[in-house]
Length: 79
Image 1 (cartoon, rainbow, N blue to C red):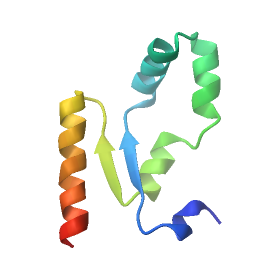
Image 2: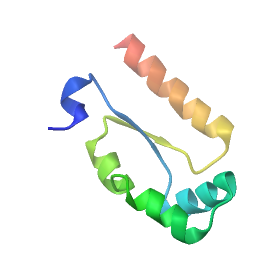
Image 3: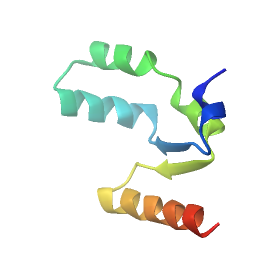
């Protein structure tokens, strides 16, 4: 069994794999081969989305992502 059974909820911060690859290469100053190895050593992002209770879309600006997080936080602590 995975960790999902040990937590109350799961939040996935999502962006498409191509964007994830681009960001990882830029952030870590690594080539595409290594970036792909890192990404593919993790659970597929689409599978993570399926297993999540909430999904934060991280394709836009930091402000957009923060806004989505705030909405989820408010939902969790109100309910």
